[in-house]
Amino acid sequence: MPTPNRGLHLVTSPATSIPPQQHEQLCGAIHSRHQISFMYQGKPRIVEPHDYGMQNDRARLLTYQIGGGSSSGRLPDWRWFDVANISDLEVLDQTFPGNRTIPSGRHHQWDVLFARVAEPE
Image (cartoon, rainbow, N blue to C red; front, side, top):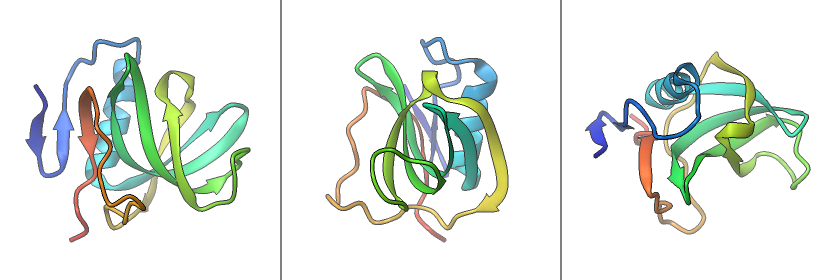
């Protein structure tokens, strides 16, 4: 069961093939509100990570993408990423204030939630 901790809902060992270091980097970046960069489908991405969890037996990341490439539309915008397809993950020095307004006004339903960004302070 996820344990809340200042906006962080951490399951310390996900039942996935996600490497522990990558899992820790994602949870830490969400908790500390640091932007991250990574490669995904051959394109560099720079994002604000907002939610990280399991959905239909896949580790997924909900982000607000602010830079890099995209083949699915203009930036900035909300983007989903399958964590198993993320490579070259790096936690950046740049921070972001916290939650952004979601167009639907509702949070996504997760099978398991590892981390969720907290409200802006």
